[in-house]
Image 1 (cartoon, rainbow, N blue to C red):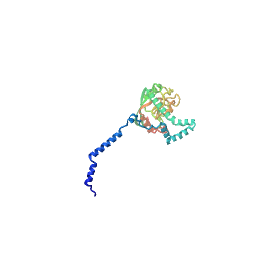
Image 2 (cartoon, rainbow, N blue to C red):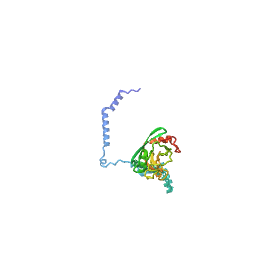
Image 3 (cartoon, rainbow, N blue to C red):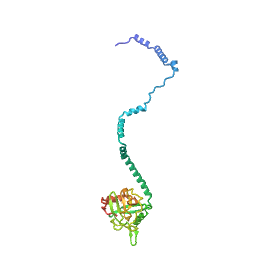
Image 4 (spheres, rainbow, N blue to C red):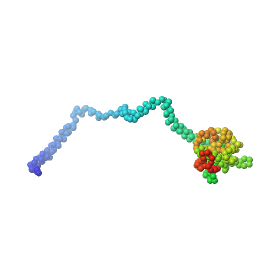
Length: 281
């Protein structure tokens, strides 16, 4: 192995002596400072502003999007739509636009009518009902006494028991003789409970007052009739909103409490033909 001699080591030390290193560092610093100092001409001239790339224009970005798949698909559909006659376009739009608006109108209109009907309630009566010999509950009926005073007075008197010359007549222990599922029930025949008799506190029948109140909700109560001016003691209660019955029967009130009792009657005793499956009174 090679071993440096004493002379060679002294030569290395002389080359990297502190004085020589100082000279080298001083000269290097001087040269760097001289190169970094600006010339007079350069200090007087204004420095150019920093270069910045301009933002992409909206037209270029739009053209870029327009070249995509979506815009090509959209142009094809637009051209197809424009080729359709205007009447066909209107018919197509009406299929999708009119039904939602009609549904919204129906819901909003029924809600407004329901509030008006609630405000028209002036009197209240109750009925206790049973299926067979089992008591199932009580219903509370609100009556529109200011709207149909003759009809509601007839109903109230028969609920309380109307006294004639020799006896008291009313709805006590009378039968519900018609119960059709998803439609309504009918009761109030105070003669024999078959639904074939007509009687009221005014005589055999009394005239229609008005049709201002409509069938808008389940639990509406109306006077049952077989034609114009044939109102009597019989009444009907709806299981669901039945607007088609409006202007055919005089609505006198609605159920405020106990709709679950009516649902129970429909479920247990209702039938498709209307003949009760079990006696209800």
